[in-house]
Length: 332
Ligand code: KG4
Ligand code: ZN
Image (cartoon, rainbow, N blue to C red; front, side, top):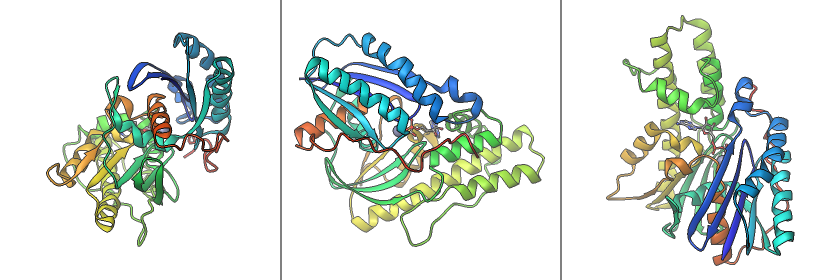
């Protein structure tokens, strides 16, 4: 069985070819250079870049036979999702392959089943998933493959978006996450400057407040290089504590010992370590994606296709479902 997966929800164009449980090729074209000067993703530029690059990626994948072709149908940027859908429909018509629409966040969730170029059915259910990316911060209760319910989500900025915006305030470039992590690791004082964000009596998150705390701090203080390191450290520490606090509450409420944390932000080693300290392996099954599969890629969409086929939910909608809140996160 040969599967082609296409991912175009935001600023990465990705195509993956999977045969049975093995990834034969996984190509990602990152648009970071085109968005860098704006300090965030500009939707119109993203869709233009996808349409410029997707055909070349399909050719480079050397596709000869396809049984199923899948694409990210949402959430994401409308124009970008449409380009992916059109590419998938074209492949589907040409090869007479079945078309499958995949939820991007399910893709992140199932990215934990990829080990190098192999896909392993290793998730244990029920589980609590924390999905942390540039566009989302969500807590899910997951009963089985394809059976998810959202327990909480962000009320304003997503966590990756907060990293990107704080990096912009500090002139650290885009994407902000890796830059903040690197500078934070050099902080010597490691003191608390910013409070831990919390939405009371809810599993929701909120990160625009801590972004504003940073903006005011930068406005009111002389920001030397060593101060910048401390700002990054305290920001990263408070955000990590906020993420883990609700995750822990969810795990306790549902009495599960299976946990997934996924999405671009889980490339962050500080957050990874805090998770492993909070949920020790002798008591919990903690599933994190390999760092190279944590940010957007088509392989994770391919895993979702495999599971959708195995668990009979491959006939779900192929309508695109853009993220209604998604706009330009280049604005602070
Ligand atoms: O999952 P992803 O590739 O795209 C979306 O679905 O949004 O996540 C991208 C986000 C960006 O906001 C980026 O700054 C953040 O992940 N990110 C990080 C790190 N690496 C990427 N955030 C914190 N620390 C990192 N090391
Ligand atoms: Zn993503």
